[in-house]
Length: 237
Image 1 (cartoon, one colour):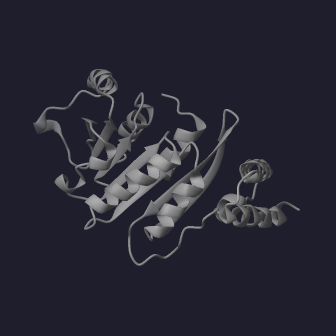
Image 2 (image 1 turned 135 degrees about the vertical axis):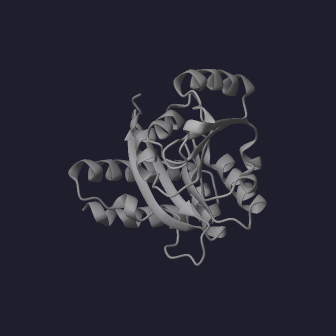
Image 3 (image 1 turned 45 degrees about the horizontal axis):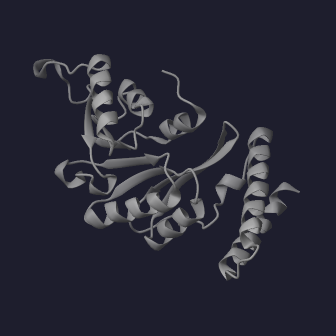
């Protein structure tokens, strides 16, 4: 099963050591299926709020990944999948022991911001890791993560089908070793001509986007945001 650039990059960021990986807004289940094949964790959870989607996906996965008899399972070498039709904000994380990774992709940054805040609020006693990839409003998400005092583990910029995506790998672990930048840091740095070109193109597009928003607006935050992005232009001189 072939993943696109975005999902493949998300999969690459998934490190060993999690007991539960939650693939939220799982859509057609491509990422979840790939994680199961890799046995990325003992438990892979497929989550979506659309009943028809989860029902179809469950039938498909029962064929692709039938459960093994209990006397043949090995906790270290057998990956179980679970499907959940529910609001992402209500993930039952406290019902499952072990380390959690929550993956949310394919939705806007404002909604993603609300969901992450609710998940953390509902599970304040847990240390949670997130891989987040919004389709827009990335600065809104970044600002919320800063306010939540999240730690940055990794950030990646990719281009797929002429669209740019920022992927953030963050954690609620304290103390924070690496804070999150409001506009990103390492996504603008590259050691390959191809990635440098993508970063430069994305920077120019982003500056133009906020300059268009600035027309007819008196929001001082827009001016500060534009200046912050413009300073990154020096990296591409």
